[in-house]
Image (cartoon, rainbow, N blue to C red; front, side, top):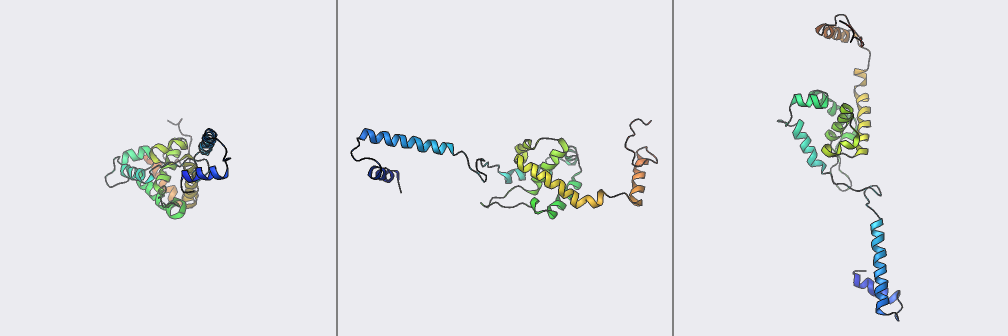
Length: 205
């Protein structure tokens, strides 16, 4: 049917008794319209998952803002602020993000079926760092990073797995002689001469 008029004519010819009065016809069409409107309203929002609303988070814009704030040539917030907010020095953060992006395709920015760019590696890793550093819930990240709760949790799980896979052999092994010498020297510089692998030292004077 190309128009409402054609549909109405079809109903008049095939469904409604020709002997019906105009008032009866009006009543029929009114009831039909109410049923159609009610059915449409009850469908709800349908996104990539039925029942899920599609939210336009404008992720590309917010990636740009995140990059400008901390990672551009002249960032809004300097190295000290980055260290305080991310609980890590920026050069270490950048080393981690480069390594895991190369290790796992999940962290590479991709386009969806509509050709729209998804979350960047930076957004996913920053989300993971914020949850680890501050213990914030996943749904608290949407305002600034523009990442949904389920995606933030997925990014966190992937991030932790990648860090273990990429850096585990280097940082979870037993210390060798060179490591021991370096750590003892750090202890001396901080007033803990000869101390190694001593965690409970708060009571020392």
